[in-house]
Image (cartoon, rainbow, N blue to C red; front, side, top):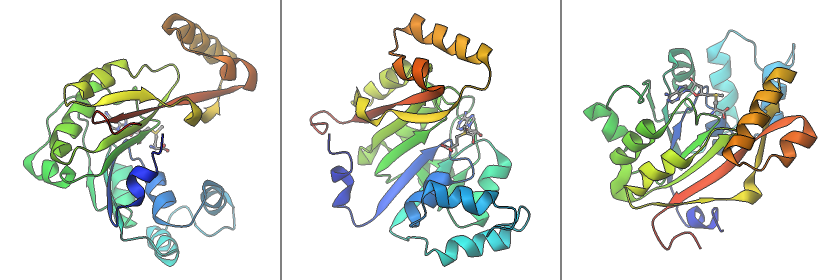
Length: 226
Ligand SMILES: C[S@@+](CC[C@H](N)C(=O)[O-])C[C@H]1O[C@@H](n2cnc3c(N)ncnc32)[C@H](O)[C@@H]1O
C-alpha cells in the first residue's frame, strides 16, 4: 500500500498528532534528525541539550531547519508536554485536552480543520473512540487518512468502527509492525501475552524478542487504499 505516495504529491502537509507528547513525531518529520540523533541529544550528559533550558532546545531545533511545509497540530492532555512542544516551535497549535471526556471548543475545531492526515503513536488505549471521533469530526471535510500505531494488546476495533461512521475503511498493515519497548517485568509479559491470546492477536514477536510491538492501522475513504 503506497501510504507515502498518497502524501508525496502534496506541497504542504497538515498533520494532526493524537497523543503528541513532547513532539517526537514532529521533530522527526520536520528535521533531518533520526531517532538515534534525538536520543543522543537528550541523553548525553555533556550533550547538545541540557535538561533545563528550553531556549537552548528551541535553538537546537531551529538550527536543524524546521520544515515549514509540514505543520503539526497536537492533541494531548499533558500540560508540560504541550507547553514544551509549543515553546520549541514544533506545533502550529497545541490542543491541551482529554477528548475522552469533553467536546472540542470552536477554536480547537478551527485548529484541526484542513488536516491531510491524523496520526497517533503509542496513545491508543489512553485515547479511544470518543477522541478519534471528535478529532475526525472536526477535520472530516478534507477526508484525511488516519494512521495509528496501537501497542499490543490494545484493540483498534472500536476506533475503526467509529471511523466507519465517517465513511472510512480501516486496514491492518502487517508489514509496518513496530517495536515499542521491552517488557518491564515478567508479570507484565505474562499479562500481555494472556490478553493477546484472548483477543486472538498474533504474538510470535512478543514471545521471541522480549519486546512489545504495535500494529499499524490505516483508515481512508473507500477506494483510496489500494
Ligand atoms: C506513550 S506516550 C506516546 C507519545 C508519542 N506519541 C510517542 O510516540 O513517543 C502517550 C501520550 O498519550 C498522551 N495521552 C494520554 N491520554 C490521552 C488522551 N486521552 N488523548 C490524547 N493523548 C493522551 C499522554 O499524555 C502521552 O503524551
